[in-house]
Amino acid sequence: MTWTEAQSYCREHHTDLASVRNLAENQQIDELLTGGGKHWIGLYRDSWKWSDGSNSSFKYWADYRPKHRALKVCVAAAFDNSGKWEDLDCGVEKPFICYGLVVPVSMQVIKVRVEKPNCVDLKDPAFLDAMLVEAKKNLRAQGLDDNVQLAWRKQPDGQVFKKEEKKKRDEL
Image (cartoon, rainbow, N blue to C red; front, side, top):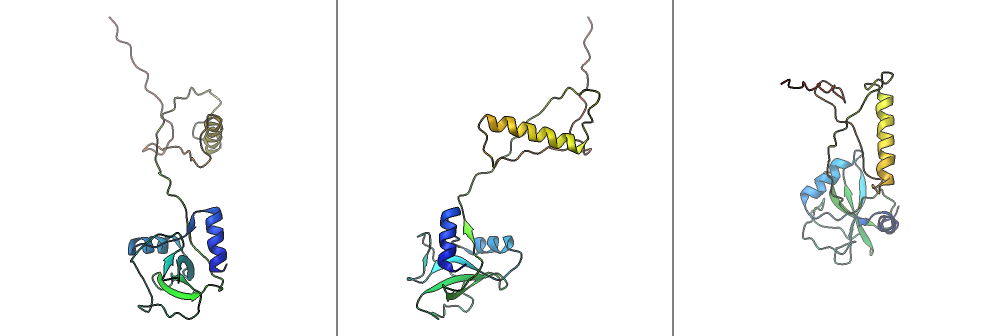
């Protein structure tokens, strides 16, 4: 897409084109992209502003300064050159990088006690998957977001479930 099309797409489906405020953020994006090449980012020439309106003094030009090749100039990060920036005509079609809201990630461990019927193999991957599907359906019915992921935590021996030791009764 052209820079303007990419900006519209990012604003409709995410938040905006990516703003790169420091070298660490640039490297983070670089690590996410496996193919290299040039990708549109949110910087454009209007006194070099970021698409989302944010301010940053960080610059990462490939040639130490933009070349101003056209009247309307946008910036692509060249991830086959350490993510260094190059100014290009905004009408050139390039892949692009969007950003969205950062969603806090947390993990919650829930212990499950299962009374196993004799015909069920608790080690069977198909059975374990079916249990997760049912659990997610039940949690969705109670208002859980679709983006929540459920997974089994394996014990050190590689098993999901461990047999509960029967407690001995103290005899008087």
